[in-house]
Length: 330
Image (tube, rainbow, N blue to C red; front, side):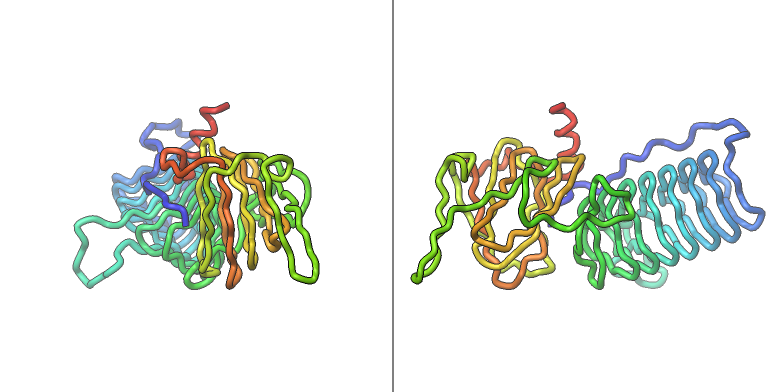
């Protein structure tokens, strides 16, 4: 899974005073202690409890029987359903949905009446959704617009737009950019024209006779760049993710010479998923496109042809950094 280099949230300061007409609505049976900051038009329902120091943004909805500890941070337009407790170190960025009884933790080795020197920071990225009864272990980041299935146990960082489920949570798919946030991506492509991201499937010339098959790649129409590097990926467990990065200038061609895998191409605005399941077809992944490989079948070997030698400076490994890089290029 791609490294996520920082879990620090960029939530703005919510301490600005607002007119009385935009004041938060606090149920008489809720407890909002002095020193807690509640944003305009936010609703805090019965039996909710918000401790001093907690920050809750505008237009949020804290349902019955929720709890917000003093060092927790909640962005704008966040929905927290009943039975959710947000402990110190938990940050929910803007537009997050947390389903009923989802559980957050902030200490990997808890003991009664013993506190760590600092609590691990857990961040749920902008627009992400967490299903009912999911458990989020401390110190992870759930990426932008990701979806965590009901009952999932999240033990590691979740990439942006990923759909995860199970115990431990594994990637089951990706959310489509053009679809509503609650709808999974369309069926993966097996063949066809260029996608919205510029990634496209290319046929590889193949010659067959009674002795077997021969696939040929030559620079030109079948391969739109000169090859400067070649490597292959194999022995990947089906639950693991590879790639999860972009290149600034390097083009790549991915070929499943054995087995099959899924590849998600993402240009920051559109995402499409491709299936590689034949050595007769490769996926051209142009520079500037974020690529993620997952659902490796047993015995899969993925051959990668690259237009440049290895250069660490050409990699974009953090998705938020990638989005900023894309915006600067426009």
